Length: 111
Figure 1 (tube, rainbow, N blue to C red):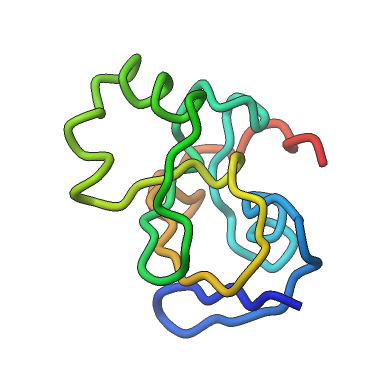
Figure 2 (cartoon, rainbow, N blue to C red):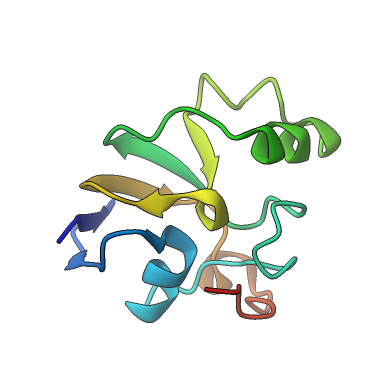
């Protein structure tokens, strides 16, 4: 099973092919996901620190462009956790969480 590591030391195994946003939420990381996992709000973004997950989907690129964040995508290794299917080990830094924003997580993303 793939291993997800969160910057700061938290590590857990997840089912192969599980959406990263759900894996994070189910393992106590209160990541935001205001659009419910539809690649529209960018609140579930993570910085990829290790793993083969740097290639953006078209939906992600469009979301980042629509939010005026396209100049940070590649240099900051940003991805939307709702669009990543975990199929290998990955290390991430969640950008927006309940704790660091004071906002509610949002509707649970679809499996």
